[in-house]
Image (tube, rainbow, N blue to C red):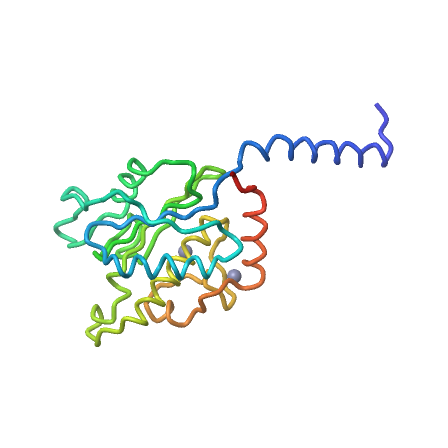
Length: 220
Ligand SMILES: [Zn+2]
Ligand SMILES: [Zn+2]
């Protein structure tokens, strides 16, 4: 068959429209982030994070909710020789507890130290499979506290660090990789790296997030 340039253009439009018709109704969702307190995580800090995240993602998400479920750390999650919790066990159990597709992201917070299969400690982890919601995040505030480094308690610094880690991990759920710009998506190897990076996305990461969220019209 012989195609002119113009007919190819029409085919493209047709495919585009078709994609829209198929994708739109299937992937509508409530753009709500759910915060899950793990074990004895401080309630006041959870509330502060909720407010800070709502402010930070204003206009992009619907709201941040706090889960009514309780989630305890089990002995089986604990590695006795490392004196740390295995983040993958926590993640698997969080997924079993909260699987509602109504959330764009479920974020669990704990105060205990944790490690992953590839790192001897981690501040946080995000897991999301393509177009599969919710995305899951676990954040530990253990190494975000000044006391961990033998320094004096600093609540406002802890609040800022927790927010930076949360925005970073949510950024992963919203389709971002690590970024080398002056950006919250910079990888933090040490607490100094967390302190150096800004709380905000750089221009190009910001565009990726907006574009990502536009793909999922709000469910009412
Ligand atoms: Zn990261
Ligand atoms: Zn960036």
